[in-house]
Length: 383
Image 1: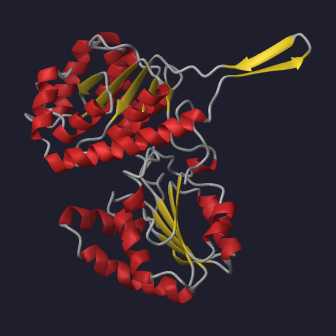
Image 2 (image 1 turned 180 degrees about the vertical axis):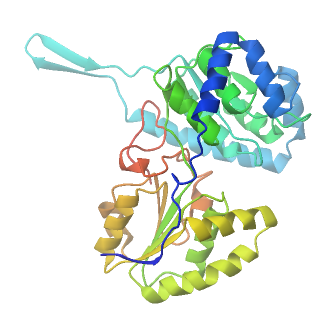
Image 3 (image 1 turned 30 degrees about the horizontal axis):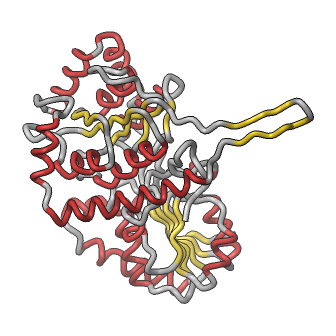
């Protein structure tokens, strides 16, 4: 049996506040009163009074505010994501089969008419989320894609998000956050087509809104806090392992990180290094990483690599990194993950944003049955 050298005091479900009643009330009010109610919640929660649907002039102004280097980086990432999405789409084809003489059955790949892509933009500008969701939908051939992101008071949506959504092909950019933004896309407010599917990450209120609306609309998944697991053996570099754990823990106070290893010395060295790395972070990141490491992190010692792999499959992490010998063995053995990173230099930080594969991924163990958004339906994991 695995030995827990560090056991989490909390889980992603421990912090689940009772937000359902609040979200349900907002959704019901917006559904009943439409645009006016959504505008009231936008004023209350977003503190924003500018254009709700961005005009061509708004997009042009935002584009002018984005530095040239950042534009280049966004286009680079968008191109990689598009090309990978096109390769995935090519694996899905219309099919017919004469099951028995005179009886023909078939499969036809049909994109949805309208998609709503939620792009977080509160404390941080999630530019990559705009790239992943909008590009995916456009490659699929979705007729209308709305990119929705929370505006900042008296500023609006972060210019980089606007630029990313625009260059990736968003048909409309909606300056509205939280439940009201999700509702606007689901109910077809402000002249938008009703979304057939809602995609993209968000906070607990956005996640709960998607959960409640599921059935009326499709959703990609119900996202919890981001999580990451590292599989490491005696050949791994303790400093790199520790840095990778901290780099994921700083995402949020409730972001679980797990180290699974068969080497006690490595585990103890990593646990000794982590506090110092956390202390070197900027204040907000340091607070997040401190809480995440204290309350949600685990270090698990296994007897051998088979027990390590079985433990990882049981956790079904969103991000799974392997820093161990014989990477081909791990590739063929592991079965449950949102995204797999093989090798110590193939880190989540390097690979999750611009490598081409999609970073909108299942959390909280959902990778045991689904993967990130594909062009038509979820797939099982990705490399």
